[in-house]
Each structure stands twice: as structure tokens, then as C-alpha cells.
Length: 387
Image (tube, rainbow, N blue to C red):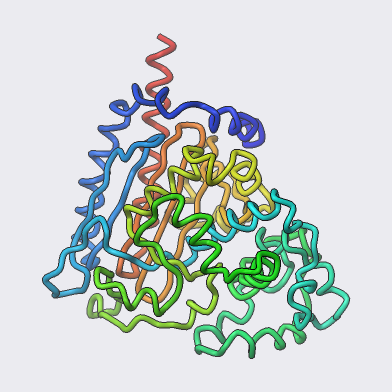
């Protein structure tokens, strides 16, 4: 079945009651139990300081487990409420919030971003007028990938970076090619704040965190450092993992990398994106943010995932994979001592997320292997039903 055909069925899947999936819970229990063992063994083998994962099915937590310490060599264990940085998984929240405003007719995907950020310009100034809000959220601006991330890494303030875009010539027209951004992606904050009359932080708290009961979720450096139960960041060196200080630089980019949350809250976020909270995120918004946009061929070459990916696109704050012929909605994050990954199958109504406080590629390996096992198990279930 093609990816397009599978996405046609998404609306149907989202409309199904969570109770109708109750009988399937035990069918994926063994896979979840196996993953818990693999997760703990892999983190121990790779000496990752700590981490957590959750698997949800419908509106139920199928498996939640934590591993290790909040800081290397420390005494405090990571638990279900330990807060991590989500890094680029923050983009999934920005996509949902922007889409909510679009479907409330407060924003339009066709609006030029210069209407909200007039100081933004490109080397050919007229080209900047062609970049819309939809291009910003859909990673299809046509700019060179990761434009000026190097300046964010150097902790240069965003208001000093925006004028530098006037030196850039786009590599393609907006909407034509994939162009992953952090700085430009965060321009959506200006549009959201100007249209809502609220700060990005207060609106996302009001519209997403609070109604979903995400009690540990927050935005920003100050909020993170004030949380007692937080995971410390660790970078990998040739001598092993080393704890580092929390860096404020990427916190400047709230929509791209500014959210903090625990694995308990990520479970709630997964459920909402799987259609279990239509009062917060409606089916039309879910369909909008997960509709494939520009093709992302680079994703097909990911070391741990390339054996399974048939196709890849970017939606609006989410990646849209075709994984062994099945749709998988996905995003990952990596920033200064933290890695995160979140994904769900709209077809199976199954989701999984991981958070770690040590930079390690083991997260990608675990994710790819998990979804391969899930879809192989689904095949076997289908075969047994047909018999």
C-alpha cells in the first residue's frame, strides 16, 4: 500500500474509540517487554548516564521505564517525573500550535513571514517575500540547511542574527526543496505572538500543556534550571561521558528547541497526537501537521534507519516516514548533552518515545529496531487473523 493511501485511512484511525484497541494491548505487550530489556541493556552497554522511555497504545500507557542517574556518579535516580530537554522534539509542539491558529483563521499558511518579521530579508530582497508561514513550519524555506546555527552555538543573540540573512541567497524556491532550520523555524514565534497577543510560552501553556495535564512541561532556560528533578546533560568524549553545564543558547529558539518535559508528559503528548484528545488537538489539525510536504531524501541515508525507510517527508513540525511500507510519524532531537526521540504509528495506534541525558546514537538504533519489531509483529498478527 502506498504512503498516500495509508494517510487516507488516518482520519478513520483517529476517529476510532480508544476502547476498541483494548483487546490489542496484550498483543503488543511482549514487544514492549522485550524493548524494556533492550533499552536497559543498551544504555548500560554504552554507559549512557540515564534515560527513560514510554510506549502508549490508544489512551493507555503500555510500558514506562527509567534507567540510571540524573547525573553521572550521582545518587539520584531518574524517575517518571524527571525533566529532560526535548531539543528539536519541541518543533512538534510549534507545528500543532501554529496549525491550531490556522484552523481558527487567526493565521494562514500562505502569509509571508515578513508580515510579522519585516527585518527579515535575503540577498535578493524580493525572495524573502516568497517565504510563508507554511514554508517556515514545513522546513521548505529554500535557505541553506541550518542557516546560522553556528552563531546560535556561539550564543549570539537572535536579534543580531536575523539581519545576517540579508547576505544569503536561497538554494531553491520556497516549497521546492527540503531545508532544515532552527533559527528560521523559530520565526513562527513572531507570528504566533503578534496574532494571539500572548507570549509564545503563555499560549503553548494555555493551549497544550495545561489541558493535557503536562504538569512538568515548561519552556526556557530559567524554567529548566529551577526544576529540582531534572536530568543533567552529558557529552561523550573518548574518556566516556562527561557532565557539562546546561547551555542557554538554543533556548533562544523556543519553537525549535525550547521545551522541557518528563517522560510522563511525553506520554500525554503522544496520546494527544494519536487522536485521543480531540478537545485539545482536533483530527483536522492532526491531519494537517502529518500530511507529507517536501521530500527529505537525506533521511533515507540515516545509518540506523536506512534499512527500513522506503520514503521520507517533512510535514509541519513532524517528519513523515514510510517505514517498511507503513506510515510512521516521527521526530528526534539532540542538543548539548541530551537526545530525544518520539514516534507513532497512526495505523496501529501505537507510540513510543525516549529521553536520554547523554549524547548517544544508541537512541536511533533502539528506535529503528523497535519499530521494525512492531511492524513485524503486526504482520504476524495479520497472518494469524487471515488463517
